Image 1 (cartoon, rainbow, N blue to C red):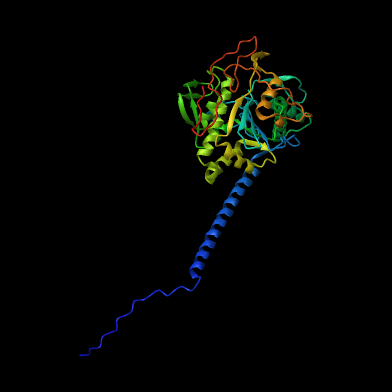
Image 2: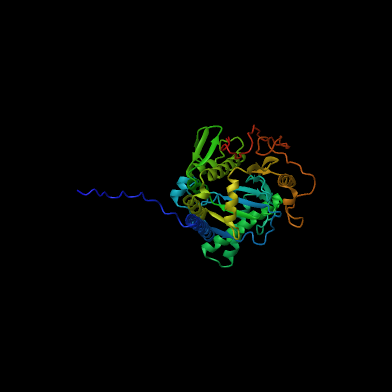
Length: 428
């Protein structure tokens, strides 16, 4: 028997890596990560530009601000106009099913082309808090830009009066195309409304956004509901509002009822203005909370909503404004309602009597005289020391009794709706 034994195997050892191989692997990994990061950046940029191009090419565009004076020092003034029309952008009747959901009446003639919502959003160039000034729709002011009309009327009427007059003139010239009449009539309406508001407030208008009646409905649905809060339960068969006291998340149909209600409210239209402010405050809060700006699916839904209902001035860089809106939706907006002197009647219609010069000082005091219109432009804010116009007690953004022989209903006020990190405020 052989005594030879197999030599035990020596344990294998890892051969030392050539100098620099570990460093090479790390470099390859770094390059891979950088390439992936660059690809994501390019993809995100391409997506953003696709969304912007899609929105810019599809949203309604207007020439109403071509050649208009602009704000200085980086400030931006945006006029938000909400039409009470039952028609779409082409002048076609909204479908009966939509009108029924909107609880807005069955006739397309109801509401006409009044701008029942007028809000000037002032965004300071220095990054400080933005201010939103609500203009009550029944303010009795001088209308500008309405062909053949001189004198005063409700500020909401400038759009409809100019539109009707221009369509009448074009029809007399032989224009029969209904869409052309609608298009050119609306352009005239926008120019007249913007010029009337600009002259009344004494500030430049840099951009505008026009929203039709269905816009509140579609915006709320695109956001998955808008949060609001009520101090008291309300029920109004005219608007369809039927809400208990407390916090609510409104769908599209409920949102329109909320912003349209004025019956049963102590201050009528002034309280409806507060509702509009609260809705916008809730919508901007929801934009921030829902991550809409960072979620392509939600952003696409919002953009699709804008295509249906919104018209803006051409040349507005909406992508830049979307970036800016991220900050606005964080709560940096203060809402104020312009003061009135007293309530009165004109040819049987209720009006708000206002003092034009006090309104200009009111605006200049809050945004700074450097942000008002140039001296050569109509509606310039006066250079005298600022003073706040008196208004009915309880009118948002103002204090003190009305200086008028006509008594104005007064009530306590919890202030104007405003956004903060804790949510949305409650309104009456």
